[in-house]
Image (cartoon, rainbow, N blue to C red; front, side, top):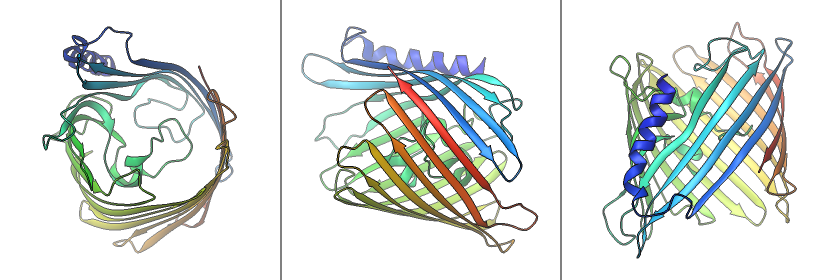
Length: 324
């Protein structure tokens, strides 16, 4: 019921832009089907996830200029023996309608100092995740674990200037529900050099009360592109209920000349200062996209240092995706 209510809110918020354009003008949409296989050798658990979704992107304009655009990602998701299962599900074989991105961005004049305003359900602007959409992909940058959630309902101011760009958001902390829970809130901001440049720097801050925990984070991230090679770094430090921790992610990837193949290697280091425990992982992955429809990806996540009383994680994942 709450997810349906959230989608209704999004539709109502999109109405102001609709007066400027026919409903099918400047509209791009696709049906997204995928299946994911997870083989957890540590716990001897094999699970599967099934996704069927609708992605849409529409630009609204008047006679002279674009006035806004909307993004909607609405997915039916089915779990099969998924242990542990995400917070929005009730059990290991549950199924749900999931709203990923669902927002409307009001655009201001490009040369104006007044920011664009995004309203709805969006990815929190923090670190490397801000510049790459990982929804529905194996590759990600740990938003859910580090920040407590990846997406939330709220408002986001954003603008690209001549030498830098920024995003500043206030959201409710309800995650998939458009409401505050027990006084929850999230404030997130990221300022960076221009994202289209080969060398890009970003600085992020995060302050929240989420799941009845006080959370704070600051992060520095950098990306460097050289021909088909890309190097990424993110270093974060923060507290969760005064329990200090730090996080470092290093990624190196290479894209083939025809952009059909991508291989990547990640090193992830997490350090819990109070408990004096560290977690180190290597992730090796590949993705093959022969055209705009098919996408096959596979990754192996191997933990080689872990907290006490935890088993060493070894997780193999494979995903087949078809969009039309």
